[in-house]
Image (cartoon, rainbow, N blue to C red):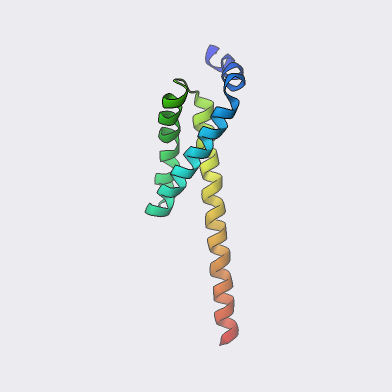
Length: 99
């Protein structure tokens, strides 16, 4: 249980650094998603990327932030896929209208 009690102290000490690390992790994982076109690889790579960058910057991390990195990456992937589906629907409608 003490692991969960540490969370407020970790968040208070380095809140902006953790937000910056989440942004860097999201960027790297999004690049992986664009290159591989595989959302599972991108999603599963976000936690280790955050862990490594956090250890290099802070020398500490927390499970909550690893899960937050995965949630942020999931939101990015879902948004990208939604935008791609909207584009495909518009293209199909244009093709139907020209016929």
